[in-house]
Length: 130
Image 1 (cartoon, rainbow, N blue to C red):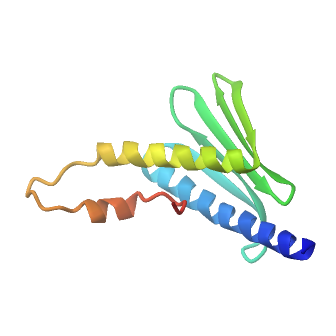
Image 2 (spheres, one colour):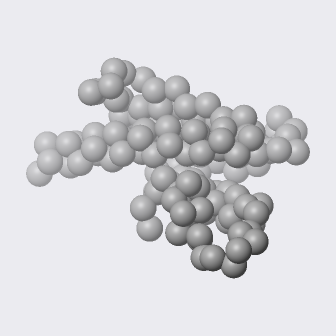
C-alpha cells in the first residue's frame, strides 16, 4: 500500500509541475510577471517553484516537491497567508479561476455578434481540471 501511495504522490507532483508551467505561461501572456522553475529533468520532475506578481505588490509563491506542497501569499513584502497540502492546491485553483475570469472580462467582444466564447476560453483556460 505504501509503495502505491508514494507512486501516486509522485504523479501528483508531476501533474502540479505541468499545471504550474501552464499557469505561468498564461500569466505571462496576460502581461503579468510569472516564473516557474522546475527541479529535475523532463522525464523525472521532482518539483517546481512558481512565483507570480499579481500587481499592487501582491505576490504569490507555490512550491511543490517530494517533500511537500506550500502556498505563500504576500503584499508589500509581508507574508499574509501560508497554506500547506490540499489547502495550498485549493488556493492555487481559486486564484487561477480568478485570473481566468479577469482575462475573460478584458477580452474584446465580437462586433459581428457571433458567439466566439469557445475560442476565447480555449486561449485562457485554467490549467487545472475542474
